[in-house]
Length: 189
Image (cartoon, rainbow, N blue to C red; front, top):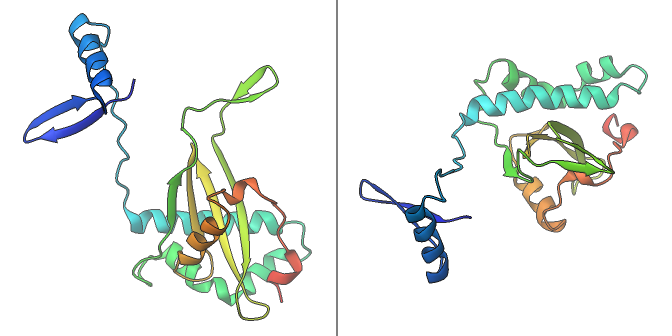
């Protein structure tokens, strides 16, 4: 069962959200039925290092998606809009930070069912292309999920607000679960 946990001075305190849950929890502890406690803690990550890691992954994901395009390698190398991200991934000195989105979209131990078989999704990724108000301009986001934790990074500029607006407009649905087609000609215009 889940329980509320908090620090009370130097003491770790457990409790239920209502009297019935508190009674069940107390009984489980006193009778020995509850022999272990699991407290999930989201470990802190260094945001700068994570941003650099996501920048590298984002460039790889974009390259993988562009493989079907003739001359894709030269087009990516010549795409000056990616230069700031490439520099940040390699060196990490400028800009000082490159924000990213982080949220859990499913449990890291979740098992997906397909017929009689179950499997775990270790990682998945996509590119989200969002038109900008300026004609012919796009925001490109690499969206990566690792063990149920979704990360998104803007490949063009160090901002994440437009991704958050996109999530709000799509009721929090991950771009991983919408159309996975990249509008190839438009990103090279």
